[in-house]
Length: 593
Image (cartoon, rainbow, N blue to C red; front, side):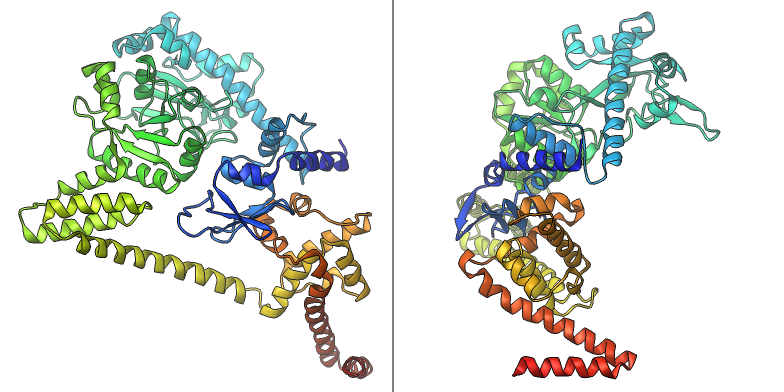
């Protein structure tokens, strides 16, 4: 497929996926002049809208986190997808057939796509191997383990649970017969390499195997639970991260839980918790793969559920994990509650102890996250002691300062006031003081970022020239402005304050030379390196009223031309070229006249 054909496909994808419609699925956008503004869903943006969207140019830029680009780059960031997966998602959404995979490096993208497809295929075959093994005589230990955990065969089938018998080469032998090489298996994380270069099965010590499946139904990894509890072996072990598997971007069981009609997600720590809950009718359970909960996982959750009940273990490690996950989810705008488990250490034990009906009641009684935090905090203080009461108030104020709703803050402040015998005004002032300090720190961070952007000392550019180039690059999307630029003799090499400016100018000149009458910002971003999308969107969002663009462009043109003359004069001085120096001074004198 020719590059021009692929670009036409990308143009159609962007045309049929309006950026305002897409971003509005993640945040509320409000009109501000010719643009739309909103809280950025790509970072913890809860108070001052930092996201700007241009319906005309079909680009976005966040002045907080620096993200930006076309609708493709937004989906990349919001859904944790790579470029081609983002394009496929948008193409499917608009019912556009996806042609042969292409990109800025055709062969590289093709090889990467082929590698991913190979890993998906080898994982699917490995999953079938483990599942079949569970039902064979050598899988009896695994089946006995699952039966002892009261897991039914229908649940085993639903999750595709399998068994890896003890042995160094069981999976290698099976996959080799299917035509896979050991290097293929290694790329999928299914085997490990010895120091001498030979390979052995990753799961070699007798484990129940849980396939990890993404929301599209692809087997992307495996988790293994050892059944003989060897002292020197980890109880649970996942296959390593690969081209298709990143722990921070996935949840175990979400491929099933996403179809739940409940509107909320029950978030667990372990595989068996999820399996047990699904078996007992809770089809909205998923787990965070035994790793610290991440912002990427929170965004993934938010796509399918606006409410989450945290059902982590009741031990100290579980409590710490609850706070981490709760903070991240709340920051992403998810409503969080916390399940208090009293009948067992984990949800699986609790549901076996009290039954599904009682567990359902417990879920309905789950505490709001802030209430849970304050209740846990209270356990650390002796509220009969005056000093402890004050310390508790200050610690609670720290928690309440993170609450975005003024009404919620007031409710909690009044409760604590009544409990401690301290006026609600004093508590509110403590909360407000912490909020002011936090806001001040964030403001200083943003100011420092802006100052760094303005000064850009590492590039040594002057602020006036840098800003003039940014403005002119944006205005040059208008064909009439570009004609004026040509008329004044400006070329890409005259954009000297930043290498990105020069690259962007060269691309704009190239597109006009190819016959374009006017340019599209989203198309330009699509032709640039992905890592430059944020800065390019920031540049191209600068604009002026269509009727005023020619007038507006004259000032930045003068700044760029003056800088060009100064450079030429400096070169003439350094080279001792008196003839050239005289010409330049004469040119300058004529301009003044």
